[in-house]
Length: 190
Ligand SMILES: *[C@@H]1O[C@H](CO)[C@@H](O)[C@H](O)[C@H]1NC(C)=O
Ligand SMILES: *[C@@H]1O[C@H](CO)[C@@H](O)[C@H](O)[C@H]1NC(C)=O
Ligand SMILES: *[C@@H]1O[C@H](CO)[C@@H](O)[C@H](O)[C@H]1NC(C)=O
Image (cartoon, rainbow, N blue to C red; front, side):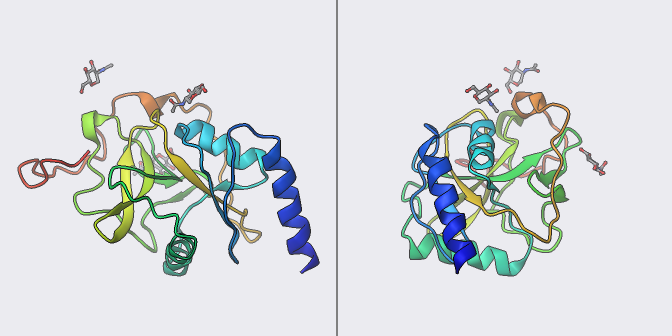
């Protein structure tokens, strides 16, 4: 209990000093949803500045926890075209990794929306959690666009990701790892 109080206070104090970061609700697993929408890089930094990390989903249990957090706090995006940044990014070689843990996406649990990742314009390299109809799931989206974001407490037990030497590739074209969906089947997918 003591630890948790200290933790929340620390986050509150740090968050208060951040113009980019306005955390709303907390829940048992310590997720935080921002109210402000920023690009992926700034979202990552805002979580870090608060002593947290962008959320990642490594297990089925974590997928459920995150869904519960969103439902319980009624923060589900209502506009089907908006979501929340998670820590996932498409690396240069086309493989998606959780940046905050350095683990490949989809190893134990996968949750892509139908027809995703679509890599629109070959420039959708960041992962958002998005609502389509009633289903929450992952979508690849343009890293330089603004989204709200979800931070989580850093896993004590790890794994912990290392920062890459540079992240410029996030806004560069990349055709690697693009699944060849028929655009006739999914004409409106971003
Ligand atoms: C893709 O690149 C990452 C480093 O960015 C590396 O760890 C991974 O093994 C590579 N995967 C493939 C299939 O080459
Ligand atoms: C990236 O792709 C867009 C459209 O898909 C194109 O307009 C642009 O020239 C490309 N940029 C590079 C550096 O290839
Ligand atoms: C996000 O915006 C910052 C400036 O606020 C910029 O330095 C950074 O490159 C941007 N990131 C992306 C992915 O566009």
